[in-house]
Length: 251
Image (cartoon, rainbow, N blue to C red; front, top):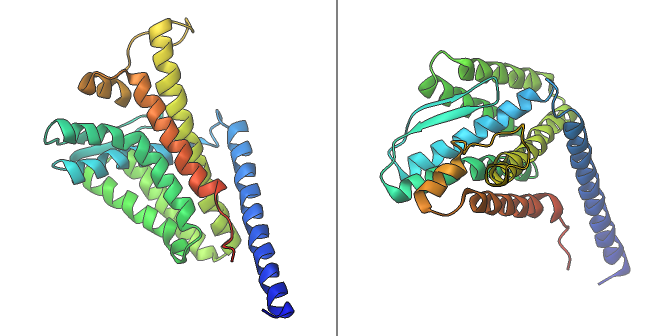
């Protein structure tokens, strides 16, 4: 190999590493801002987006392993529900797992597609899916209103034709969705189940809530906290694979 080729390939590697570090720095910045503004109204639209992903996870599993769904809705208070048609025990098992795992895996998918040729279609595809689901299964509801607003924002972003703005919006959606999904798994599943069992926080819920983990516990006779830990580990591994394992190819 000539010295010129060697230096050129090494420069390419350093350039790719620089891009990767810059992107990771952006992700960390978004994460910090999201955590600082966590309980403000500014983050609520992003939280609602993740709740939509959560319900889409249930719906996807229902179509794959069941008879589909009858309804899907999200609420302004960041709650949501999906009315599913199950085929039996295994079908119910997969549908219940689809919520938390679906929300984080969809969010990770956004960040992965961000680095592919599909990048420019991410927001448009998300808007079409959300609008289609809302029109078909939500009726005249807050879910439909949120989907319409989301679609309008996406259309405006495409009309602006600024790649930097587009990339920032995709990264914000992806990172904030991952953050919310992991936070929700940890706080509303693991810590909540610990509090149900031990009564650590007197002002918090002390009765068994009707969460996905609680329903799985009834279905499998495995404690809800175990399912929360499983979901959390899978979520962290998935995020690690996308965010922290982005390395240039070497000879």
